[in-house]
Length: 151
Image 1 (cartoon, one colour):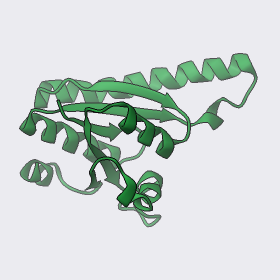
Image 2 (cartoon, rainbow, N blue to C red; image 1 turned 45 degrees about the horizontal axis):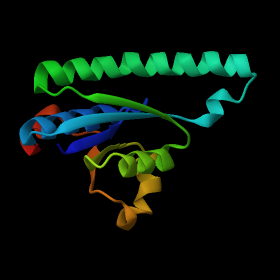
Image 3 (cartoon, one colour; image 1 turned 135 degrees about the vertical axis):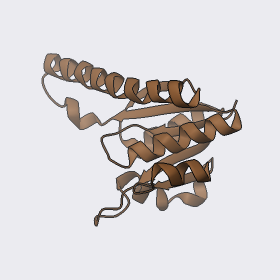
Image 4 (tube, rainbow, N blue to C red; image 1 turned 90 degrees about the horizontal axis):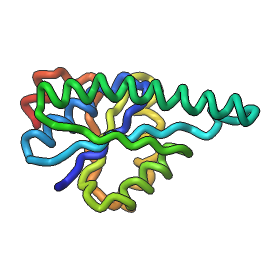
């Protein structure tokens, strides 16, 4: 089964990327894999404190994931899979794509803010030609109705 890989982070544009991935998966018989990457700098503390912070980060990710997963299951009939990795986001995204041969499309949300489309989209834009799968960039300001129409 072809999976749509979508990134779970704290950005506003993440929501539209999630919606798009779920709708496309539902309409094409695919699956959704949600990847969350915990940056290593969150744990540069004493060993015990770092472990507590790591567990708290994972709990936040699971809680955030459950909100999206419930919507995907209830509205789109898609049961997403969660993957949590630790490291720098772009290399971890590429590792995940290379390690899971079922991933067929990477879906990212683009910010409409003045600072540009976001750090992941900006970093990957320099590597578009080298990506092992197609990349879909979903505008963060796209309405739900427009998303439904194009998926």
